[in-house]
Amino acid sequence: MDFFRDAWASGRPVCSVEFFPPKNQDTEKQFLLTAERLKDYRPDFVSMTYGAGGSSRDRSIGFGRQLHDDFGYEVLPHLTCVGHPKSEIFSVLDEFEQCGFRGIMALRGDPPKGATEFKPHPDGLRYATDLVRFIRENHPSFSLGVAGYPEKHPESPSMEEDLRHLATKVSAGADFITTQLFFDNADYFRFVENCRKAGVTVPILPGILTAVSWKQVSRFCDMCGANIPVELAKPLEEAAGDAEAEAEIGISWAQKQVTELLAAGAPGFHLYILNRSKPALELMKRLDSELGSDFRSIERNGA
Image (cartoon, rainbow, N blue to C red; front, side, top):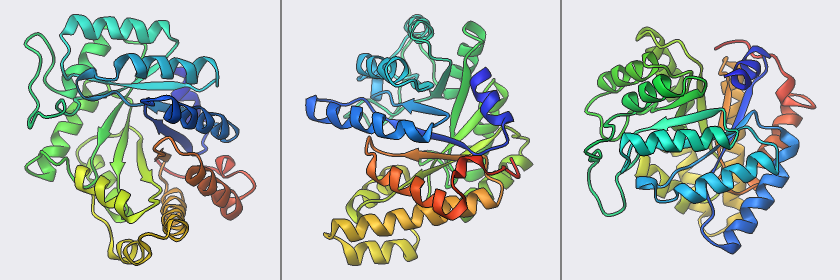
């Protein structure tokens, strides 16, 4: 866990970004170009998604290794319970270790494409809590992140029950929480407050998406249940079809979010970049301009 402890102990905001494995040569070029362009901003770590049912397992590991070996990133691959017996999960953990990965985002995972509900493998794990516990028991050196939902997991019947499950995940051995994307900071602040009341004390990294189009943000919010404030939704709808105007609205909104989050004591932020460098780089540039020559050097004032 040294890499995460070091970043956390530095007192500066932790910055991470999420990649997903490209599916073809064109998207691979974009992926590699984005990885190269983001190097100057030195993310503390990057995460690599893992397809439903492990459908992109080989590509996730291969491109994750490339991010680690060729670009020098600290890589936290996603790992899910879906479709895997425990013996296979153990093998994946061994492979992660051999790749030099020192952390994992431990998730239950979404059902495979076409399935409507999650069904564990007969010899597998049912919940993210089980996965966290399994990793801790068998590969205790990994730093472990888990997911949190400021506006409630779509499958959870209540926020209270969702928080209980999150507290259980953390007590099983998670080191930090990365949240699902949100656009209203009040949802994050309320979530952190409720987590603390529930006894969850680990760092909670807010997840930020730089919305580049009304179509994009609508699709993502439909999938994860996030709310779009009218102050963001209305101008995005009005600008729909004007790519430059939509991107400007989304980046400006993300800048406002991050600035407020850091000022209020958030530990940093996690960017959902969709393998695109331009919105992320523009956001970083604006944060530097607003907060100082290097926003990463500002002192964090909370947890």
